[in-house]
Every structure is written in C-alpha cells, then in structure tokens.
Length: 54
Image 1 (spheres, one colour):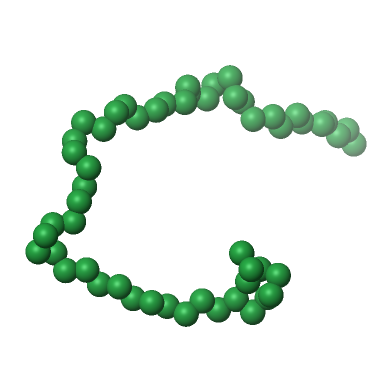
Image 2: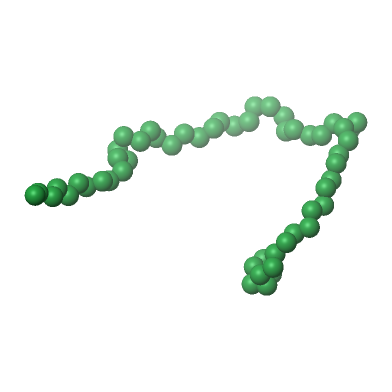
C-alpha cells in the first residue's frame, strides 16, 4: 500500500486582481421631508457580565 501526500495550497496566482469601485457619481441619499420614520427599541439580553461592559 502506498500513500501519496498531496499538497493542497490555495492558488493565489490565478486569483483576479482586487477591484475597487469608483467614486460615487450621484448625490447622497437623504430621507424625504414627508417620509415617516419608525423606531423600534428592542431589549438587549446579555447575561454575561464580561461581555455586557462592551
């Protein structure tokens, strides 16, 4: 019985170059004057005091 060791290495050479989006051409989104806004306050359940301080 022979065992071959296969080297599994991600092929980064074949990965496409990182692409960036261009500058925004449109104006910034804003909520209209007559648009209503709904706010829902939900309780936060964090029983661990070590995490609660965060």
